[in-house]
Length: 145
Image (tube, rainbow, N blue to C red; front, side, top):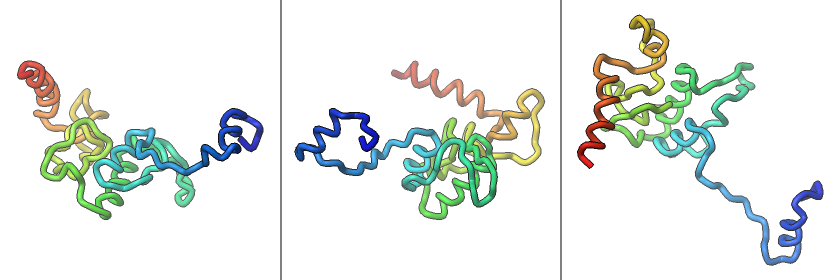
């Protein structure tokens, strides 16, 4: 408005009937930010999906398991995860779910590799039951509806 754009909104504000207020929407625009808030209650805990971490001088990318783990450790130190005692499916963060219940969440499993799935398993919690469970759960839900 200061640059002369949005003249209609400026007139509404200037006539006194519509004052400006700051507003936190509670709906971040990236998956890691949503999950940080939803699973751990940490508002604005994730700057973006990819960002420059000036303290380290590095690009942070939350599809990288190491970066995701750093953030999740900070969140977990502030409170219990919403998914504790449950399971986490296809998420950036586990939300407090146990490692064996974090299916396709960004958790590394060391240097384990599984043939063609090596790149996938490097960045995911994966067991021989993860894929069948991922396919069977939606099918079961559809059939039981």
